[in-house]
Image (tube, rainbow, N blue to C red; front, side):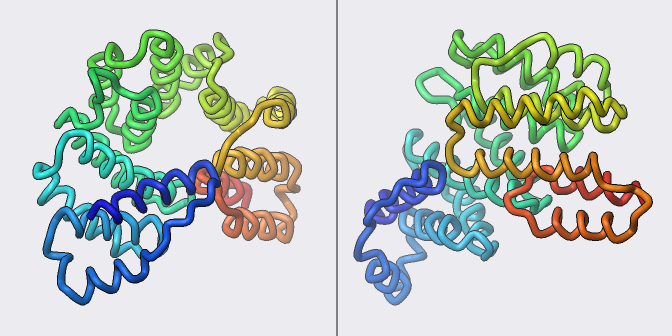
Length: 292
């Protein structure tokens, strides 16, 4: 079980930071586990399915088995260990979300909600700012507005003080955005240049969408250029870099496509479907489809 646990954590780290590890002898471990029916042992099964889900992301059965293990046997694990397991599962669902698989918005939200209710995601009295923001984003995207607003106010004091003000500001702006209260959201986002790189890029992505929908194309062009320059100046890690690069590229094409040219629209539609990762795929497709 310990070998599987270490392998899961290393694989998750490699996925985000593009760091290579030699995990070694793992195939032999898997064969032994499968042949000896050790998957009946929760401590082994939970890491087996976590590793398999992380390694074979397109095979959704492994994640579903992992989720079953978490729900049925999560209480058997020490607090620090079950927290790592939750984060492995959440890392998987966020990866699927970023690949455009819509059902994983709900899967991610339910993991956050359960992990927060059980205080599993709180470590040494602190809640990670990334966990806080992701919970807000998922709740707002699913129109769980009451839960999301309550969460912001109830859990904000669990965040480290140095991050609290910016993250709460972003979270409230994001909530207004999802409610389609663009005037308030744009005002809030325009007030602050966030210190955190990903927070800044996420805020700019939402501004980008609002400018497009409100037909503020000059502001949109300027924003796209500022995002491109910002990406060149800052070091954006892992799949985040590809995410934002693709958003900038496709949005530029969206602005310049001839809405009356069916071939151009179809080519852009096809490119959006084939571009990965692209977490804004659904929104981009909708804009193209509304041109027709």
